[in-house]
Image (cartoon, rainbow, N blue to C red; front, side, top):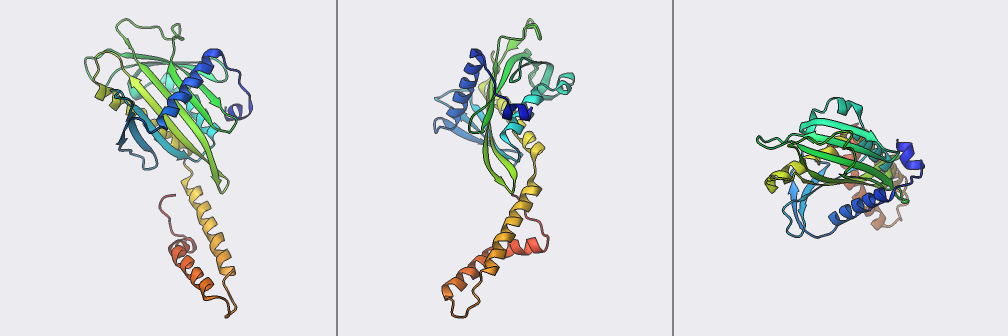
Amino acid sequence: MTNLIRNVPQVYTPEEQISISDGKSFMCRTTSNEGTSISFVSSDPLVAMKGVFYGGEALGTGIATTIMDATAEEVISSVYCDLYSRKLEASPSSSYIIELKSKCLNDHSLLYLTERKLPIPGFSPREAPTKATWWRDQDGSAGMDVSITDEGEDLLPHKPGNVRMVVHTVWTCTPLPDIGGLPQTAVKLATKVDLAGVVPAFLMNKLGTGFLSMTSRLRQRFDRSHEVDVMKRTEIITRMTALRKSEPKNPNDSLQDKNSLRKVRKHFAPIWMQVEGRGKVVGR
């Protein structure tokens, strides 16, 4: 799938082109300074989460951002394949899913149809028939739009008494410079959930933010922090070795150059000791 996203040009239907355009517009809005932002406490320190309320809207847009040790194509491929996973379809135990059906429509689109129960008593089950479409831009960035669709009635028919919810989720992946040959990608997830019916807005916002945890699980799947750490240490060693070799040996060399070298050594001394002593460096 990764190779398909990276190397095979796609032809989209007019409806799919609209979905992609709507997805990009939805995500573009999250980069503006509009709206009121509220930070959420994330269980993953490497994933930032927040909710944004635009123009006095009662329903907020949940946004999660992080950096993953993978290419943009690998990230989108993983998300796309998870939606189509037969394993998940056979065991829909997460997210209060009662029933789940998926169907591949072509190389870039699939149906993801769910029936969910709410984590509160007295509310009817919610149906969310969605269609996922991925894209890749010329600059190497990639994304995926997941939005409500009228397709799939034959696959998961509407049940009397159920309520159709509205959900719009968009993933974007922007390539960053590699670290020692290891790919780095800025990943952003934005989602907005409307459970429909008489459901308090605060509850819908709370449930909507639950979708953001997908970002953390995906980041951990691609986590190569140890390798990135090794690459950064190697870079530090290379720089400090070059500094040692460039140390003035002529007593007539300027005092300013010597003082500059002392300041650099003092700055890197703790890291140098950890590297030579095989100590651990916390974080990335």
